[in-house]
Image (cartoon, rainbow, N blue to C red; front, side, top):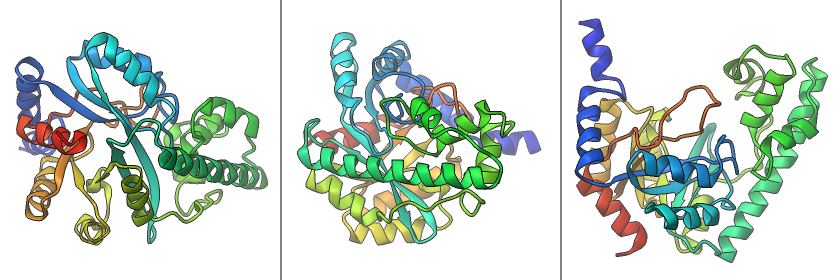
Length: 301
């Protein structure tokens, strides 16, 4: 019985698997939450597109944290292998003491408003990382700032890169330990971000001509309260289907979305081979009617 309950509450439930197989062989698959090496993923946008094509995924979005530089590369690669790449971004924001992520879709790839907005967020990220590196040195867990920025490469520097630098330097035994003991919320080396609210992110996405979606609401302590607040700020959708969502959480999000006329999106939150857990592109099935409605709303078709 315990095993049965575990299966039924797992993102890899029988229901998800059957739906995924149906979509894979009969209908196009969407994966609208993927991270590349331009933020905290391990693969380039081109490599991601190639993997999506190999997995049979037809519509994807590169949603790097506070970064859109990899979107153009992905669009070009997608045109060569039959994968439609939707412009995307994941903006990290604050909601009280919670971290809330807002996904933006469908804005012009060269939108000056979006480019300026993410540049400001990137600069704030670097300032934050510098302060966290300083704090780590003060508590006896030194890492080199240059190494953190090198790990980030041409992407937007963040705590995952700092976690990897800590691991490389032998200061922690795992990625999770870095967050749990040193750089997670409330830990000794944690530095809050420059305040940028979820409402600010929705406003930025809309100003750039995009659609704003709440990412992985199942991770929030009170998703209903957050969603109701953000609906008043113009929220367009909910990421009801996510790699970490249980069936119970997914169904709750579906009901909320239907009640309030929000679109439902889904994605694997793929980061590649490094991180607390590894998902696969196309591993999260979205029913075809909801998938196509989301695409239609995002692309305004």
